Each structure stands twice: as C-alpha cells, then as structure tokens.
Length: 114
Image 1 (spheres, rainbow, N blue to C red):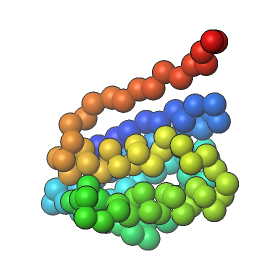
Image 2 (tube, one colour; image 1 turned 30 degrees about the vertical axis):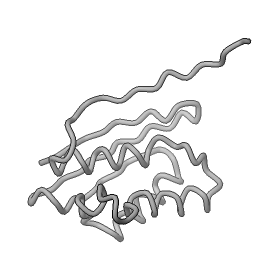
Image 3 (cartoon, rainbow, N blue to C red; image 1 turned 90 degrees about the vertical axis):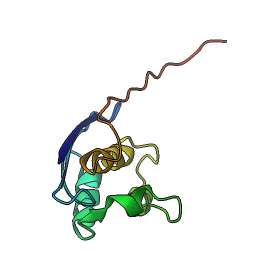
Image 4 (tube, helix red, strand yellow; image 1 turned 30 degrees about the horizontal axis):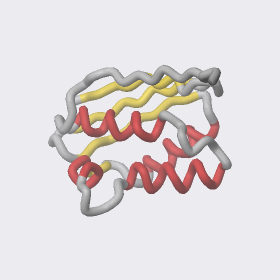
C-alpha cells in the first residue's frame, strides 16, 4: 500500500511531501521531499533506518524510531519542537501499513484577546 501526506508547516512557509510505501503491510519505506533544510536532514536520517517497522512504531512498549530520530534532529538544529512534519510521517507510515485510516487532520490556530 502507498500513502501520501502533504504538509504545510505554517508560519515557516515550508511545504513537505511524504510518501510511505509497504509491500508486506509492516515494513515501510519513506520518501520525503521538502524545501526545509532541517526536514531534508531528517529525511536523510530516516533513510538510514528504513524500512521502518510500522508495528514497532505504533507500539506502547517502545518509543517510535520516527519520534526518536525527529526529536534528535529537530533539537540539534534548534528547530521548532512542535513541527508538524514528524507526526505526519507517523500517520503516513500507519496508513501505508493499514494501521490507520487516511483522514485529514487540521489545526486552527488563533490568538484570543481577554
């Protein structure tokens, strides 16, 4: 199965396209394209860990390799720890492996005057 996630990360203006593919429903290969240099480095680090075991990634027994690699890369670069790309990678892996349904996610972010 193949899953594709398009991410518009917000105020930074960077866009990312994530493609997750699996032939066996468990081991997922990733292809990530982005204008962001930090996400390009993140994509490179994921390539060193692919294929990603989707079942291990979703297990409560051990933290996901996706989140571990993302945290190490984003923190090292001083990037926003709330970057929307890492959870989008997780969702792409889950959908490709049939562990989640392909549904859009959205956030509406505003300031509130008291």
